Image 1 (cartoon, helix red, strand yellow):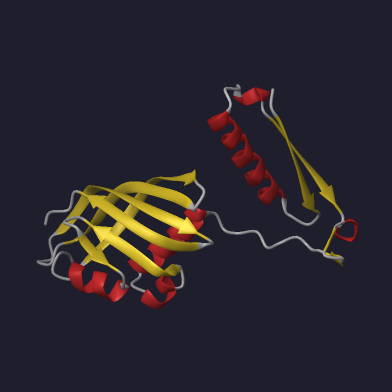
Image 2: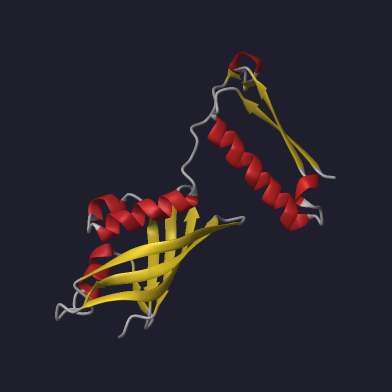
Length: 182
């Protein structure tokens, strides 16, 4: 029965502590053959005045949005065609690959490439899955596309999968698979 003990500075909200506990539980389950109800995560808290590093008392760090929340915010900005907002989520060397091996580094290039393919596209999401790794978190989202072809004909129910790598709160890359016609 694995027991994971964590010490945090007081001040993190219930949702942060719960999220940390769930993720630690998942990490143990992915590493040790232990039943879910046999994994214990215990969070102990210390007052900021009882925690010192480098002779300085410290306050809790700011909680990060989840990688899936970062991906959702980026995709929402892209759907609105708010490229300035979308750009704030990108790492400096962000790359994206779309069907047909179309590769882009700039959002404007993606918009120009998509212009003759469809007037607009919207996504309905079935799920967001996060996979944690040493260099970042991989986020898969999948669902269905709807929108309008260049001739004005609507479309819907087209499958898609997006795969993002998120590191330090920024999107490092995006790979896209879908059943849109060429």
